[in-house]
Length: 263
Image 1 (spheres, rainbow, N blue to C red):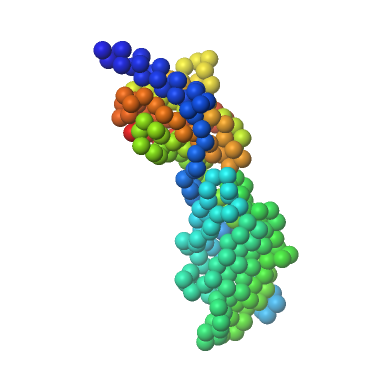
Image 2: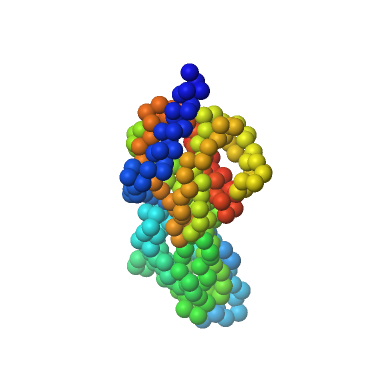
């Protein structure tokens, strides 16, 4: 009986994964990337030409809908600005693809910030945005003024593990893959149990250990977009809900996602 059920589920799953009439694109859930400010140095060469540069540090989250990266929003979680401090709440911070601006509105008891980080290349999920040392500048008031230029640094996206997210109510489910290799292929795998199955020779990514057991099958291949995302919405067999485990394999890097129960 169990073998019959497994055979039925495999047939139903394969039919659902490969049936283009059932498989369709659906709106993606928001994705969040983390960026850090790396080796950013502020030199007060205008008002204090003999003072050494001071390092600015911080991190922010960029949240966007896959396919619409440019219209995301950036929110800082950590920040240190020399001669100012770390009070994020007091600042107006505008994060854009080509720049970040920090402003302290007004001038409260000789406190003020006007700092512009301009980028040579725009923010993106895969490579650092290099600070433009010609256009980036600052004025910071903390009693005496500190005015000068940003002399180096970059804004770096942090590595995000390959992700598989399910949404919807089984048997109507949406598969979302994030942080895969851009413009490449990923394999959506499924099995009836978890384990340490190793992909055998003569298959892509041979030798890779999965989180699935020896019943592992290929559900479908999906192509990722320029941001490393892919998604599909489909209907699966009712009996698959709560009985099938899923995992994504990046065919370019052989990285695997965490195992997710279909439910």
